[in-house]
Image 1 (tube, rainbow, N blue to C red):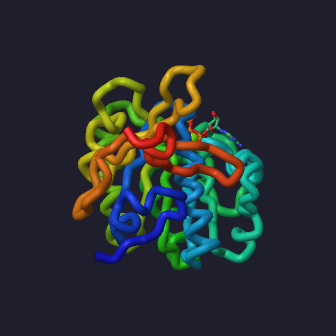
Image 2 (image 1 turned 60 degrees about the vertical axis):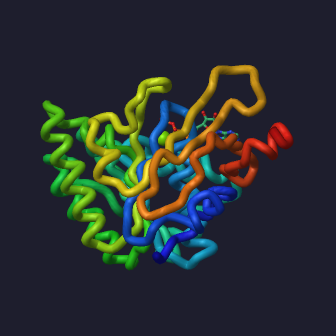
Length: 246
Ligand SMILES: Nc1ncnc2c1ncn2[C@@H]1O[C@H](COP(=O)(O)OP(=O)(O)OP(=O)(O)O)[C@@H](O)[C@H]1O
Ligand SMILES: [Mg+2]
């Protein structure tokens, strides 16, 4: 099976070499667990190290803030955007009915999922993207009255991503400690892999962890792994590294 190296230090060793090509993976976790950083690292490293163009669809945070935040890791998104190795699609404020200053964005009038999907498809074709991130699924469901409609939109989105041949990451939000992997109870089934990020209390050194809940067709790690957010972004570790042999 062909795999895509994620560029997330320490992760590919846990999944026989990366994400299964052409499939999709869900990154789920509570607020502030590192979902945006991890999924942007996948796009950024994909473009920089593996020469694979990527589309980042942001429905939560404004692109300008994301660019600024990840500069802390030395990730120059703008440079790669100028080379069309990365395109950011801004759906962050159209959903509130406000105009975006971004090159790729949703029209303000009549925000709907079909328009968003069309724009995503257009940008994927434009740069011949190999990687796509949707951050986040709950933000996609923002304008829906009922869960049934959101589920339908998620199914449509995942079908469309599969058809376009990209390897995608969907970001979803869950409450810590609740035995659920997506907000709408459907995300975890439409994807081929689920990575869960945790934030454990305060005051301990390794308070961030992650585990791989599933990765179809992959002999993956089933352990809980310490996760660092350092000056180069996210690094996934093994428990032995933190505590010595146990
Ligand atoms: N430069 C940095 N160095 C160390 N830690 C950082 C740095 N930048 C951010 N963080 C940590 O990462 C967290 C934010 O990560 P991120 O935005 O990826 O989380 P998220 O899961 O997407 O959150 P949300 O659910 O709010 O979208 C911050 O709350 C902070 O704890
Ligand atoms: Mg986020």
